[in-house]
Length: 391
Ligand SMILES: *Cc1c(COP(=O)(O)O)cnc(C)c1O
Image (cartoon, rainbow, N blue to C red; front, side, top):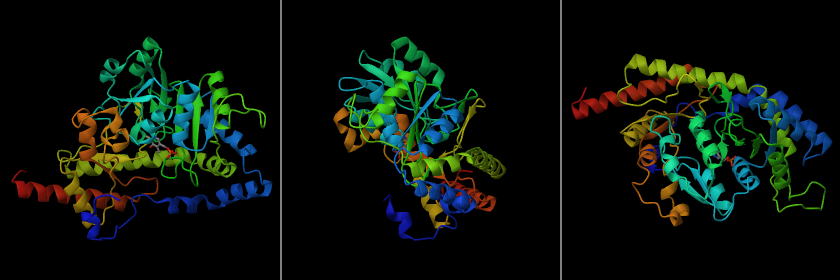
């Protein structure tokens, strides 16, 4: 677990950072019916609900092909394998993301090459990409972090110029748009996670890869099930990465509500912005930004503060739950030390790890809770400016 100083004071949060219970209460009947149907059929592996979900998610993001798999991590791994990425190859991504993005690259035997982020979006800095491309580069994995699309146009241009695949890590971005187009359908592959805390979460682990090329879709289907089309006959080496029928059935139910939930997240982001503006604390913290042609889906609402750790402690004392995504950049973690990156090499990612703080955001978050969050941050700001003599 994280730093214990704040939690040692053991102030109970006034409301949860994230609440799956309230959401489940609204869909309990529908979910339980779908679950019962799977039990009645006893078709737990590759039941018809899996293909139904593939069609629905494909239609949702406008991708011609969608292949369900066991997790978002595997979605990335399978996309890389389908593209033929392996030992000796390099794949570009950022170090300010969940470990799975770079871990999946390493799992293929390829080398992750980190490119720093833009401080305002937390996404890959497209200005820095081209100088990291070598003759070994095979793919770029832009991450749509926190639900905000990466700047895909220049990435697609580099990809065309250097013949690279673009594999979108859309684990946090289902429904997010870039110039009006849903992410996950813009690069060659889109990788989605159905981990419970994602905007579309199942009752365990689950994932989906979307593809634009029918040949790639075929390879993905082979790869996720032992390289086999027919039982006990393998055409290529694959793995076991199927999505459970149960998860598919649950996800189909939840997908029907996704747009409503996404709007509710966006509405809460708007309320935070209004409340912060009313309190005039925009100078003390930085709010998430999104250009008008980006549809942010707010899987997380992440602010920045130069006094992040003391702010977090203060909020904890006020019963305001927060979280840190991510406390340590990937290039400085032991698992990636073999790549030889030094502290200071990715300054914006390193700063984001020190300064970013996620505030509660979910469709059912109450306005009074948001007011409490903003009030507590305003109090912290006032106590800070008193103690430093600033105003
Ligand atoms: C959650 C997540 C993943 C991995 O998804 P799992 O389903 O947990 O394996 C990959 N990338 C990012 C950015 C994520 O947030």
